Length: 243
Image (cartoon, rainbow, N blue to C red; front, side, top):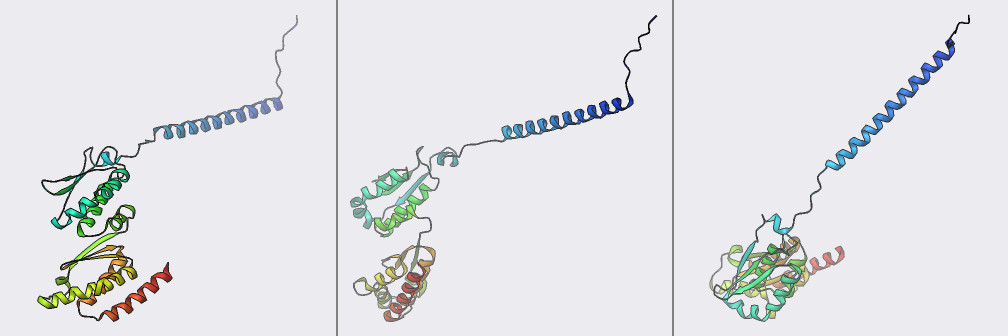
């Protein structure tokens, strides 16, 4: 009678098979970890919120903002003559609504759904306010294009208490004969200056306004115009070397 001895395993063969099985299991675990990490990164990327940018209307709470600028009586005629030059940049570039209220004599500004810049309303209000102070439209419109321009206003009485003829002479020293002194300060400091009675308005950058204001204060305090001219020439030379 024949006896089936079955399958006979050798000791060396058993150890080799065990090592191969262990290596295969470790490889499978590494593949599983890599797959899990990849799936986790994909899930994190899918869960990251992606919000669209807010419009100017949404930043204002979903409501239209409003500004009102008072028009002085002596600026009604210039406003009527330059109305088209004021409306064009306001509507076409800043995407705002504008009108003149004849009853209250105010220029009224209002944002709309087409307004793209959240600061457009304030920039336009500053532009129109500068025009009301006496600046030309060509000079005031720079407030819409540049971010570092400002309007600084002060009174002659803030520098020195003057009355009567002394006050008149101080204002005359600021303007100069035929506006010569004022133009010299404007060209040297790259600013625009308006002398309206006892008020002085300066349009320009922060550093340039400071230089122009110091020159005007020196004239108010009694400095001779010739000395101010020399200072302005030195300032103009330094600024030309800088740029």
